[in-house]
Image (cartoon, rainbow over all chains, first blue to last red):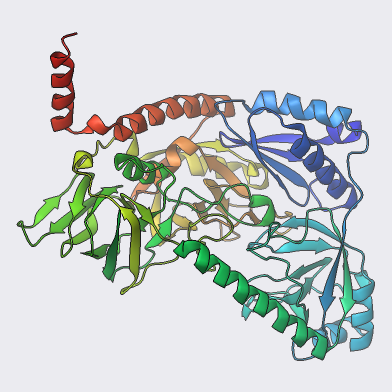
Length: 248
Length: 338
């Protein structure tokens, strides 16, 4: 992708970071460039690279300044960008269950009113969205999903609401998040998901990788509650295992 | 081997358990956490013969008082200019103003309180401190409390395989570079282009004071406002420890161990890693002057600092650290008749 190499801007971040910026505004082209660099750089094993952090329009590369420096790393990255043909792998598809019952989706009526649609039409539009994981941020496991249909894009609320629990499906503008922690948020809460996006005891604690395609599937309240129950039993079992491990 | 128990009889806010940090998960929104002063944390551990990354107590200016039960354990206290009071049943109170290692016996009490300077101190224990892990680390994640956790009064700490290690007792050298200075070196950017032209000059020409809005996430500064060109159009970008982030009100915040991994506010500059731990030992009201250096110079400083830190920690880790043991080891050498 020589076009990425031509347009990338390299900016030092202190003594151990290099920001590779592909665009100043969010776009699907910028996302593709971010994903491509993330993929090739994570696979390339470039000397001194400690961590690669993909974001909306840029990639932060953290390095050990004893081993490399900004100029050497820039040259390494430019070489990778020039050589990369079509580095972006086929996205994994992850299924996320969502229950739109008004018990959870208490902002659904407000979103429907703002969009001049029925609640059912908002739900249908949300299910029909083409979601990709753009980046993680804000809190552990908070994956920013791009791809909310234009018809249901609503701005953030003027102020954040405290205490949005884990497992809520929230939207703002073109983005959607499945929350993993109780945090304040100014986004609209439209549903609840029992799908564990962050499971600290799993071999792969985070369900999504950046670039994954997310498909929401609607479940009813009874199914939701049953799955939440099952997930909490698994958690309890995992906690017991931890205690046993610690007491050994 | 025995298990020693340390009971927290009094503790201030923001006192937590920390190992070296939770690394490699920024891409999943998980910040490194770990000690605010990584050098002092490593020194406290190495002084006892622990791995540098072992779990220790991070003590805030709120201080902590610990009562020892069941078995003796040698502990090391390093970081800032805290005072260490050791009350024993078999000796008079001893107060240390230096970084030190000492042995607590059952019935002894250890109080660590802020002294002449510094915001964070570390209490490491000879043995293995039992602590909950989360995502592979015992460092406390402040937003959730997961990991080792925030310590509260009544909390009991179990030290498995606790050792009383008289050969480890004594003063731990305090290096000059652990002390905060009035200068803070930064590399400008990565988003300095979002500020009006005068903003960089304002940041670099006027001292800024630390405010009381200081926790493990960062510290808000007080000084000239830094005016942004346009705040709202910036996509969220990665943040690191040391990012100088400016919110819409123009007030800069230096982000520290528990920073969020991304943020939509522009970062006008980034504090170099050699300066960030000592900076964290400043107290609210202290002032710093930002000095801009270029990226290549910053890398040179990081390399020199890595050598300096490694030399220091090697000295701290060596058993012949105290005067007594230096003398003893030189006697052994003479005995061998070199």
